[in-house]
Image (cartoon, rainbow, N blue to C red; front, side, top):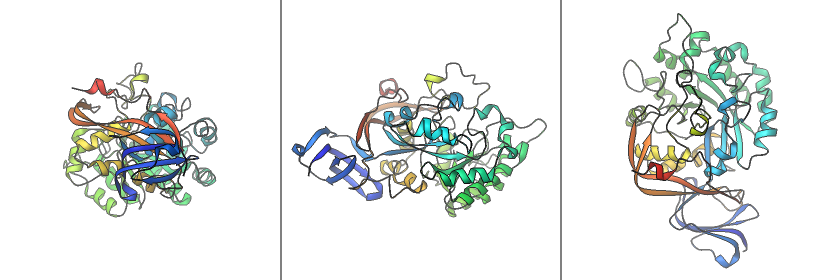
Length: 416
């Protein structure tokens, strides 16, 4: 058998296939042609020696903001977040709406080398700098029928629905938007992805109990829906403000089949993460939640006093994976959060998330460095990690992309 590309000698970790060992992978015509302990190098046009590296199914980032130029400073370049960061699939969370999805397809998804998907916004305006304009995100700004129709007409792009549950919005319109978002998701046959953690200031003269908000929210959710930001540093997350413990109603939701997405971003708190994980909750999927306000290249003119999502800690998907390692998850379980688990969440386990002959050759190659590496959250807390995961390159449908994105934190800068 002839190969266009041969990955030789890498440690393959593929949770969905139960594969964990040293294997060669042969690629032909953009698809995986063979996986075996040894494949002949003379049969390949190009050979990449990945000895000492970890080879895994193409990484899936379940939470990106890549509607560049349309969602203001929020939107990053899809390939900088994607293939140039070693990530083969990026899911935009709530950037496009029923009105703006055609532009997302034409100007973002189709030109990108990365596989681009989205969870369509429940709001007509989508992600148009909405963190500054809460009035654009009320129930009057939702059109259920139009959003359902667009989602049904674009199943190759739209894999879910995005909405927000936080105390600023609840002080203005209660949970009406979430109920409408759930109606959209139910009628479109898609999961609902719910943001937790405060976005907007509470309306003047009001006060919302974050615990009561969570109690009212979670019963709305159904199996396959997703609770995002379990480790949020903002009020209204998994941890009760009254008891300091995980809400009992969250446990009830998880028992029904609701899953948890990290949604790192500017929400991630080591302190909150330790509490949630110590209680026994493990994230099912891991989204980096990168956007223009939480990366250095775009934050120079950001005003932290006005934007709660302005960030100072450099991170990307592999950096967030490293944090899960530090928090006690095994490497194989961490890899599952960016491969097999998100493929299941997206309803695409028959296409992505595992390595098998005949499938498109979406493959990520990462390195596990040893040393002392400083990791930070956006609360200012730092920890020293003995290992660091960093991307090396990826293959997207067999095409090679080096991990050259400026969004990848430099390993030298983090070494202690």
